[in-house]
Each structure stands twice: as C-alpha cells, then as structure tokens.
Length: 66
Image (cartoon, rainbow, N blue to C red):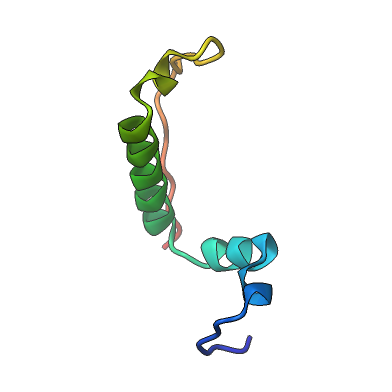
C-alpha cells in the first residue's frame, strides 16, 4: 500500500474510504459510528421517530481479536 498525503478528488472515492475504514481497529470504528449517530441525532432529533425505526430486542456483543 502506498501511504502519503494526497489532495485529489480521485483519492476520495467510496472504495478508498471503505478501505481506510476497514483498516481501523474495531473500537475506533465503533467510536466513529457513535459520533456520526450523535451528529445525526443532534441535527435531526426526529430521526429516531421514523416509522421503520425499531428498538433492538437483544444486546450487542462486541468481539475483539487478540
């Protein structure tokens, strides 16, 4: 993989972003997910009231590889 600083739009494709995101540790991915969720709820609090939104019935199990 070629690491470096780039400034072109061609480096901002969804595939490149997905590749970057997939290389993050699971805890970091969850932290980012939580921040994006909090931002969405802050900008649009009624988003939680959408018709198809359902509360999960089970807990979430977080696994980590050691």
